[in-house]
Image (cartoon, rainbow, N blue to C red; front, side, top):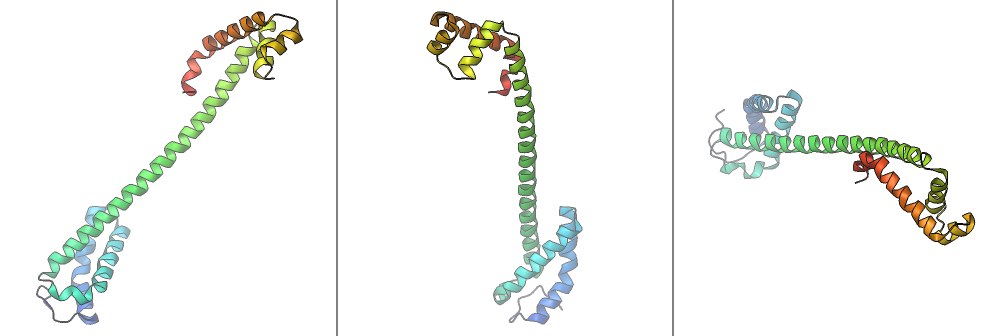
Length: 176
């Protein structure tokens, strides 16, 4: 059956003949361009399902070969777009998981170094700093409890923060 000229009516038998003639070509083209036989099967199914759904408007087609080639090309493009979206999504998920793991590792490491830096402070400075930051006490409350001036509290806090900046400077990239 010659299918390169217009048909007055498109019925099941004509579509079956078109399928028999063109499905292997569609499959080979799709397999060649996609590099995957299973995806090529999906393209064949997509193209001929679409052809079946458009059967009432197919009488206008001058060249079934050209028409099916365009449908195949469009189906392959859609499959490649879909494949790319899936790849990008998977890549983003892997990146997110890696960053989360890295951030958790970096956070744990930073906290460990923070505790070490606090432990290295002179006892009075460490006590003032922890009362201020861990216990959320005001300078006035710390001064009253330790029987020192607020200026001394301020001095110890300033020096403690300076010590921390110096000791943790190499880890600050993990915070920002």
